[in-house]
Length: 548
Image (cartoon, rainbow, N blue to C red):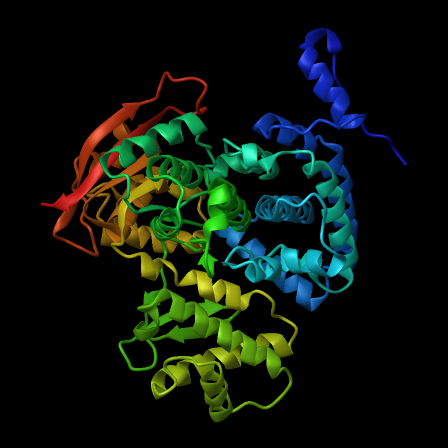
């Protein structure tokens, strides 16, 4: 066994309180701590004993089980999402262990904040926590839904998963999570995203002070405005928007409902979505105690730029996506009501599970829907489409390639529910040049940039240098903003000087969804000499979507 230096401290360079916390972390730990980014990183970051111990155990476990079909499908799907995000193959066992570690810590922090318990439940309930069933039992839907990191609650992984949760909780219980006043998970998220690929990913994290200033600017104009962060990362903008709305509107059951209905997020990065959902819960804090019935955390693992495409205008199939090599079709009727859609997919999954390795028929499924009081059982084409989904999900279950496909299906169509819903689109979209994107994804982006939005006119060779953030700005404003509403993005400053962004500056682009609308610049904040900020010169663009 080799000993490894986790942390060194030169007490001659530390302030007295820093020496105290250093000793307390390793030898005493009797003080209840105020949670800050600094203290959380010390206890749970990459140099911490907790991280080193748990990720080593995770890696050893993963090496034993990763070849098994039911676990391999989780890794394969996680890797596909990351390939879109990063533009290349960056996944590996160590990164998967890192992501599982932070996702597990995030779930534990959410449970600790909601329950305010100083002791953990039994082993069975810890497994339910990792899978999300414990949160559902507490009336919180859509927090954990058999995500890519709940594999720790399955089969022979459970023992390690439960032990990991108990070890992390022994440290977390020393924090008063009621005193949270910042996005403390952002620093951990930055550490645990592979730093070698972070540049290509375009992962430039917005500091709280800048995000807060943008949020306040928008809510000053409309405190009850609805907002979407279409690339929410760890959820900094969402966290601050919730805190700001709570301060302005005061805590009440009406404020709780308003926030759930008005603050939305999405990201294509599986770890980001878990962390953002946790930040959403932490920002709600005591407001969650006022809930009556169930609530849904409105953050989704989905691509807000590349939406499912219309396949054919028919009774049975309007939209098409491919999951694990099988085509799934959905009628537009099912996409009118978000709750109905989620219920339909959940029922399809449950029927498929109950009938593993059995012969199923359309009539059996229809009777199941009637028993579950699904409201549209008299709609024969809709029931047929749902049965087709059942057959696909059942195939994955029968071949031990399931666990996540219903979760993927429920998320992938969510942007279709967002269209022209929001007063504000806000955030920091990916800063990544077109040339760094995955080749298969480039084909879609090229069609959008050249054909749909006409962001390059007469200078097609410049597309390789074009920031994807440009398309993000135009497309998300086009798809998700109401008319006479506002988009506010943190962007690379090159958008206002580089040749490849000339079409954006001159506003020669065209909206594809609503040709009568365009963007009108309202404010630009020049952040070039602001420090500390980013390694790349930045700005904030605030624009209004309005008729020509």
